[in-house]
Length: 248
Length: 159
Ligand SMILES: Cc1cc2nc3c(=O)[nH]c(=O)nc-3n(C[C@H](O)[C@H](O)[C@H](O)COP(=O)(O)O)c2cc1C
Figure 1: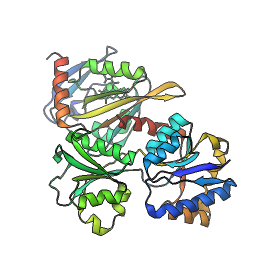
Figure 2: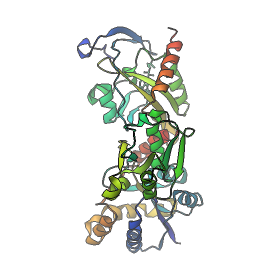
Figure 3: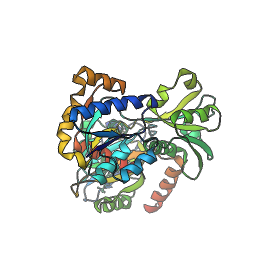
Figure 4: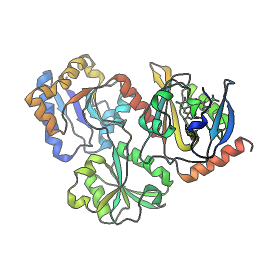
């Protein structure tokens, strides 16, 4: 049986090959054939999840909710580091100084990242902006979101904080954060599905000690992480309870 | 719950005596001072099945004006503001005990007699099919929604 592994599409394109290297490492360590499938959109990945084509996943917090609550997945690890936050950006010369300055009809550029978009919508609520009085432009990538703003085709954009901070100084120069989320509670997690449940302890031990070898540490560094940390099942359940309130 | 202490109050205060669902009462002091919601944050707390606070995040502590040790182990009605109608909380409890989510605009009382407005969602924490507690996640409301809630609550209190 081949195990299907996938990664939430929120990582930068430059890391595609690093995820393949991670997968090769994982296959060798587990002596198990693992197929890595990287979907180029959140929608495509959601469809694969619905069809049962995912056994292992490095998931964004929203997909993790669905997988844990409805598909019998278990969270076994998370990367060390800050939690997931997002930013609502605008052009440097925009008249808006804070969210409440935004007016009905505001043009929003965003990707199809469900976490970033959900949190972004919540951050627009203080201005009474929502589905019926904003004009949404969906773009494929975070950089395209930024370009819409730079070209004056959108008034605001939603981005993960790391994506915004990762832009070149040339792009950032003309952009400004209106508000940055400080939720502190939602994070990406590594999940094991029912097909691998029997080996989840072994897999957990493997991830948690990954940084102890030079090879493992090198792979982690390339992926932008120092080490995996354990997660308590109750902490994940609590995160999911919190996320469930954000969807309303 | 202890009465509020006048020494903690900041500004001109009006005294009220709150009667809670269980029949007990508490003397509170209320000022008109509003603390603005911290942009971009969530205010999170968790209770046991009886509504006793078991956990809260730093934004919750900061906005309440209490320190964490004064909050943990206290009933959540410690934050009840006299402008909130009892019916809103009856509805909250009925909804979450039935296993559903409750949403509403809430005016909370601070330790210093001031207040802050939130849009709150309360969810039951269901583990192995059983409700083991409740979590409330609050976010920043718009001024327009707060004004509507304020008018509605005033009408519900019949004043
Ligand atoms: C998770 C949770 C969070 C709550 N948060 C608040 C709150 O922030 N402010 C508040 O006045 N009541 C809150 N309540 C409701 C109180 O438990 C209580 O019902 C209310 O303050 C009215 O007091 P009484 O029911 O004793 O009359 C919360 C209840 C739960 C279960």
